Length: 95
Image (cartoon, rainbow, N blue to C red; front, side, top):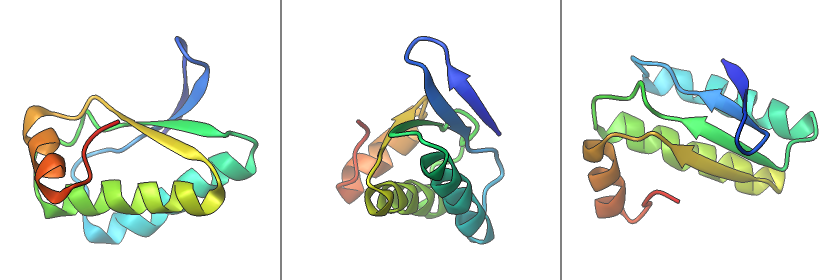
């Protein structure tokens, strides 16, 4: 699902749960579509990812890679404490 972040006027890509590795290409394609549509910065809402696991880490890593390849920026928002800790542990961190 995409929306607009009212505070910053950036498109929002909502990552729904449960998420699997099979969902990663679709999420990346949706993100690419936002950049093709003119976005330079996209907010990814991770609130639904209540389970901190390596699939969630893969989602974040691939979305960041997709943004970089598209010449844009992605901002991760609303990640739970467990996911934040796991991202820090893997060196990915949160914005």
